[in-house]
Image (cartoon, rainbow, N blue to C red; front, top):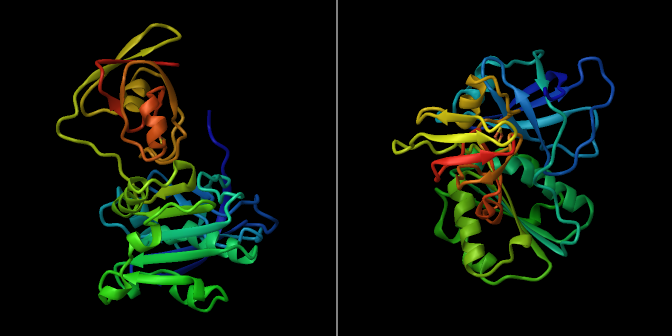
Length: 321
Ligand code: FES
């Protein structure tokens, strides 16, 4: 099954910070774009690279454009470099319609938002939505340095700027992010949102879980996540429940690749364990979860996995295919 795509035109490409560009995407012939909610992302078919997910960081009440922010990540597999180096104003891009895996919890009485680096993109949209709704919130925006903080001026110029604290790695000790002060004890009615690189999310969520924040109050989205391939990856088998057919997955192959080699196609999008498009039910066996999409509880249930990057602990997985 092929996912529906839209064609958009790059109306504006702007440097937002060191190594970060924003791209304003508009319908080529005018007219409205499909609506989105704060925290949504789109898939972008990056020219010459794979599909990549980027969060929308403009006001969800706008229907004439989508705004995305892209970090030029030297460690990436080429998607962000291609966006920076090959995509120019006037170019056309294929994108998906917006999807939201990182929505605001409507029952929240207060929101604590944590952005690390380029993780500001969905968090900014969520912050502005909370501000527009007159909600109680605080934004903590961490970056390596001031010149790497995208949308700094937009935030400073906003009416909600008194609710924002910046934390720069190269700044004074007293401005550093203090998780103990902010998350030291779970607060009922407060929801926590975290987006950024894996280390940033692990630190914030690990701390919050460690002091007893309920999972239902913790929301997160990874950025720039890459599946962890290791030298110790071994081969294993997958069995298709429908036909009983057994397919070997070699150590240097993903399950999706092994299935494709046998003519069995699983729909994918990010191919790095963040979007959930390839999610497949596991009927028997124990997956080795490498994704950033399932919650720890969902992973522990071992009844589904992401075959684009996850592997197996058991010698065979029986899949609902
Ligand atoms: Fe995105 Fe597998 S394709 S999680």
